[in-house]
Length: 286
Length: 265
Image (cartoon, rainbow over all chains, first blue to last red):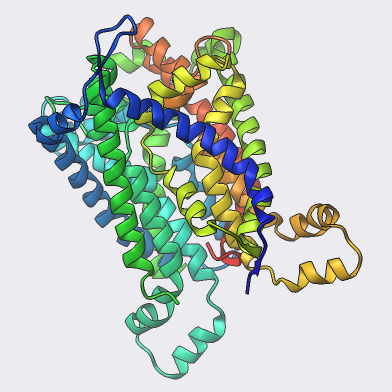
């Protein structure tokens, strides 16, 4: 039981102040822009909710949102099962454990634009390892600057490369917390590997998997740097995800009003979906 | 070696291939890179690295990045410790709302915040300082640190606190000399994640700096566009950005496995 103590607020105060400084002031700036029109020179005109209406009706926004959901859906459906399978087949003890953990965490520690640049170099048709192999050894015509399907495949594989380890590390942490006695009991009962997974390992991994899925959802939904460096949103608009489109509008065209309105809609969608995930996945918890 | 260890081995190979390619390319001459495909560097050259280590605009990028990342890790963990303690031990007015609100800050796309952050930090006179980037990264690192630490603290029985008070420890003394050492695995994991997310973030770091605190990742994009497309140099700079992360993860490798298992995370 937790003790009720209002003085605990003093412990939280530094966190509150720092995060509020970084969160509230910028978000108010965005709200401010989202209801005004500007032509530069610091002149602003009241615009009401026009920008919101314009964004919500625009086909460009619908298309970017659709691509964003497709991207997040694809990477979740690949990374989560793959991460769990890898975690299940990892050794539980011995010298290979740190080796596995260190090498697996490596991609997550590379700055995001380096990840994009690295995959760019890796997939160049004539001089990249993957690009050369596909084109000249397997004879598949592969050029992601021309072919939207190739571009999509590349950003998906890049994200799988970059982030599956997060799912692996978290699932593995859940797995090693299962006492040996559970497995022995299952062995005595003659449980099949599937039953061991379903009734012992999966329930133990549930909390960490919730965190993994939530983090992967939030981060993939907000992804910007890696696909921007890798494909620049092309060919055409085929890999222009929501963030890339937003930055194009805000900094490329300097349409601050519509960009701000779009930011708020974007943020609201992320919040809503995260909240849905969170409530669905924790509804059985006491 | 059992049959199923083939899965992690294949996965690790897949992870290492692009990294190998980056490292191999950093040792090649620009001529070799552009003249065609070669699996290994034909003539190994250290020129790309020499450029980086002798040109201040390059190596200062690394120093700048390390300064703001360390600063951010220290700030995030320091303020998150008491907050996580409050969340794990006490109930207070609005605690659940506050906790969820903290987490929502991880959901805000950095692209949304770039321009307002620039205006905010310019107006308080911190633009182009290491502190600006360190503080801005608190937006997503503090919530994560609180979340991780709260999980670890929840695993420590309350009797520990009570025994210490009975023994006459004051709260600060108990917290610093007993409690923090008890959850040092948690502190390690939290610090690791703060370091990681601050090190890899570029959009905000680039927006908030111009010259004096410019991160290495931004130096790379600038140089790549101004000096043509020097792939070898770019690859060498990229290779060097992997090293700090690799060092940090080597130090916390045991905490990562044990640490997660201890906490509710």
